[in-house]
Image (tube, rainbow, N blue to C red; front, side, top):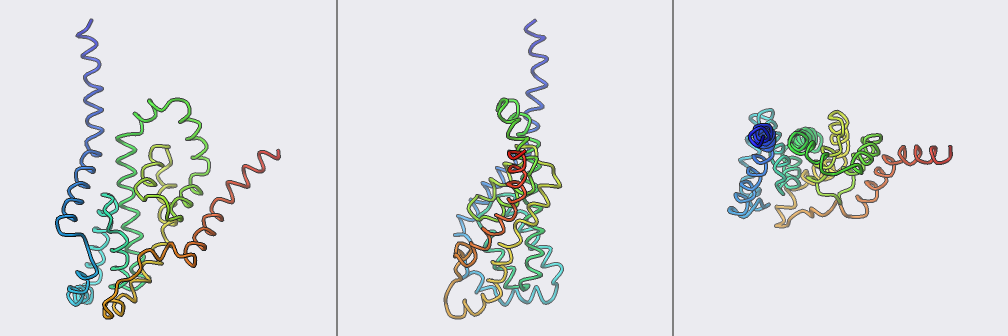
Length: 246
């Protein structure tokens, strides 16, 4: 009888381990990325200034190839939750201009976020659902009914960690297309702000200064973002009001 229990339980454990392998690989790669950044002292605008001519030469000789490299680098940085995304967005604006830079960055950030979403959904969703209990079903239903609005709000407001917004929808059963659309649209304003900041980076570096990367928290920027977040959540508020009124 004991042998039967073991033989039945073993495949489930093996399947659980297999499900965790992509997540463990992602966490391991993230830790390695952090270690490499710490070892070299991170990325700085001094590095950018020192290699400015070399970078511009590469963009001039192969804009598509350089853009693809930026896309892959941004996807990896997002998937591994490395704290260099803002710097890369400013760099992209500096090299490509606001519009082209924003396209590459939005594509890279969306793909990197999808990697985290899919890995978390595959590795954690079933276990999380089993252990969370009935309350998760109610939360899932509420979140999924208006998932696009919620994801837009979470992406628009720069107060939630990017990795957390990648993880939460995966554990709440949000549909892939809803998550993808909400992510791609929700990051547009912030990307435009930092990419446009990069277009004037040359003059800032020439003066021996560094750009203010906290600019997104300035009321001039933050208040419009909050306004967009309010617009995104209005359909949810309207639906709740109609239900309560009915």
